[in-house]
Image (cartoon, rainbow, N blue to C red; front, side):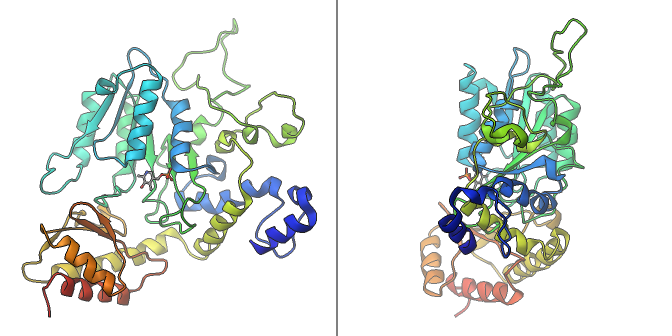
Length: 396
Ligand SMILES: *Cc1c(COP(=O)(O)O)cnc(C)c1O
């Protein structure tokens, strides 16, 4: 970060082209490419399928602009009823943008056991896809649900939806850096995420998007397949557009200022603007730590760490809380969401606060505890559990 500031102070705009010897960061013109290799390993993608850019919600809008092309027949979007509000707003606004009515174009998955455990079983998701198969354009789900911590069966849901002609998008806000992902092999159509949760890049950090290689050249491509009489083929997926900006246009001609958009094939072609070098520095610093391990190794530690926390929280008599996160480790990431009995929430939070234990609170009665395998220890889990039990009045 410091070297970038002194580069700006001494070289000004030449920083776009000049190497700095002791920096992680290449000349600014190439700064976006420098993060894609590390980022792509974390989500299981090819580097060309990844762009680190904008924010989660902005990226969702950009990809929906390309993937949501409603027709009379296919116009619905399936998502959770309890989606993160930004995802709900983004989807709702796209539907309205196309002059459609969200009350019938949005199909909201409601947990069948909402009152006890607000989870969404895979079988229920697949049945809902089947029920709306003919009329659905997109299904959008979270990789790991922010409230319950449920880790969805991404490959199974993706394969099933695509077999019915439905495009599949994943919001990976709570999955990236938390669970190993194989977006390329799973053939996911598109995904978006932020880098300020398990990716540790600081509040409001620059986000990311994934678009599968199979779509790399089908969007605004100069090589768009045409029929012999020159008509553009209307084959599904072969005719999509994007909302474009200069940073998505080929680098070789980007500064020629010709107003001819030549999209970079793949995710980089979705970039709009010159990315903030300071923002990218924070993501690079985080990725340089992730580069020292693998997601499989982090996951191995995470399974034990969260399993240990679960053990400490469950091997007790009559706890005044329930774990709403799936008990099957394969269906969750690092997080355990604890639902507290009525009235104890304020007292517990106050107690934890006094002991300098900071957890996330979701009104009215849930706290989220997520031992992060990159920097949390078994001792942290033990310490949390013993203070939490005191806070709940279970031990003196
Ligand atoms: C954190 C989070 C967001 C935040 O979106 P930004 O655009 O980065 O502010 C969106 N969706 C989900 C599911 C999240 O967890």
